[in-house]
Length: 155
Image (cartoon, rainbow, N blue to C red):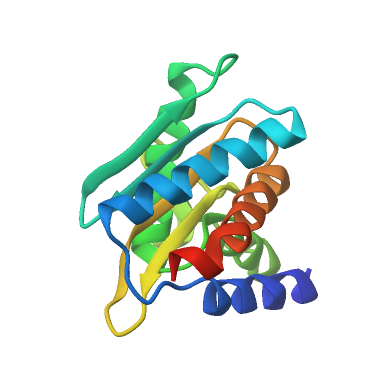
């Protein structure tokens, strides 16, 4: 698990943006949808910057529940400044939980994969890029693959 956590730390350093506009959000969101389609998966995805939702799409086969998962994953990313899967695995390794050790209600926070910090160089954490609909690891991996696919053009 330690190796996976270190890998996620590297991802969070690697997948930062020099700038992030509303147009960038559209490009990233569409890349996420295309990545899901290429894998034959159905997801819901949302992108927020400074509390404003810049992109949202729910593919066929998803439900309103996915939006709640996104909200709870975003809360974790915003609280810890790391991907929601990174936080979940680190807490597991430490034998801790969001509710008992941090006092964060499970209705509003979830240690699950799919939430990623939108980090802008020189600005820091500016928002969230989030996917819901698959297993924890699949949500995380799909999102990272999509971010890597557009990194050159979006930075």
